Amino acid sequence: MRLFRKRWRSSQQRPRKNQWKCPRAADLAHRNVETKRSRIVAKLAVVTRWAGAVVGVALIGWAIAMSAQYAGPFLDRLLEIKKVTVEGLRRIDRGEIIDLVKLEPRTALHHVSTADIKDRVESHPWIKHATVDRVPPNELRITVVERVPGAVVSTGKEIVLVDEEGHVLAPLSEKNDDGALPFLSGVDRKGLLRGDKDVRRAILSGIELAKIVGQTYEGPVRVNVADPANLIVSVGSTQFHFDEEGVEDQWDRFRQVKQAVQGLDVVDGYGDGVNDVDLRYENRVIVRERG
Image (tube, rainbow, N blue to C red; front, side, top):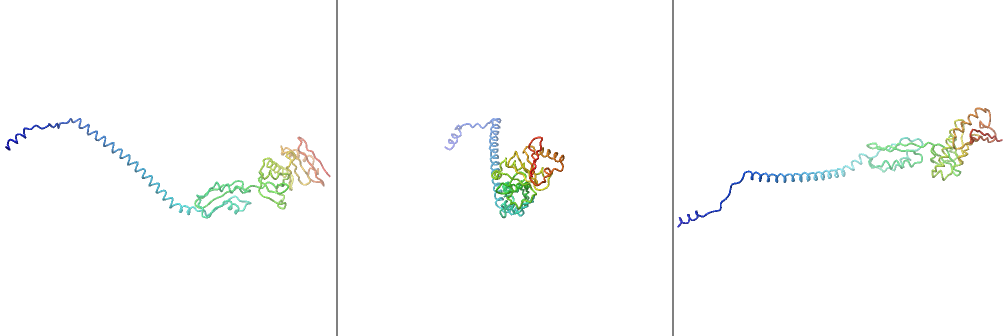
C-alpha cells in the first residue's frame, strides 16, 4: 500500500519553473535600480543642504539678536559722549552753542544726529556755517564759522547790527555804536526782518559805499540807503550823492577832481555848513557849498 502511494506521488506532474534569465536584462534592471537610488540620494542631499542652510541662517540671526541685546548697553557705555569740542568761536560764548546742541546726559556717540545738531547750531544768528563730526570713542566736535559784523542799521524805530550779507545779528543801542562800522539809515524794518532782496541789496550797496569812501576819508561814515537812485554818504560836513549803479566809477571821477582842486574846503569835507558833492551824473561832479 505504501509502495503504491509513493509511486503515485512521484508520477504527478508539477508546473515547470523557468529559472533562466538573460544577462543583459538583469544588468538593465540593476542599472534602473541604481539610477532610482542615485536620484533619491541626490534629492535627499539637496533637501539636507537647504535644511542646513535654513537652520544656519536661523542660528546666525538668533546669535546676532542675542549679541545686540546684550552688547547694546555695553556699546552705549563705551561710546558715551564725554567731550563736546566747539571750534571757531570769536564773539559767541561756548555755552550758547552747547544749549543749542541739547545733548542729553549719557548719550552715545552713534545715537546723535549730526544733521539735526548742524541745523540747530546754524539757527544762531551769529553762525554762518557749522560742521558736526563724531570723533570716536567719546568726542563730539563742532566747527563753526561766525558772521562778521558789517554795519549798524537804523530802521527809525530800532538799531540793529548786521553782517556783510545783510543778516541781522543783534539789536543795539546808540551807545554801542563806536564809529568803527558804517552807520546805515533809511532801511525798512519789516523788509529787513523778512530778509527782502531789495532791502538786502540796499544794505550791501551802503556797506560797499562806506568801504570805498572810508579809503579816502577817516572818521565815521553814514549812508542813507532809502533811495537807490540817490544814496547819500555823509563824512564830516560833506555829503556825497551816488547812484546805486557804478559807484566805483563815480568815486574814481571824484578822486580825479579832488586831486585837481586841492585846498577846496567842500572837497576835503571841511567848512561851517553842509557841503554836497553830486556824482550821479555821467562825466560830471557837481559841488554845492552851503554856508
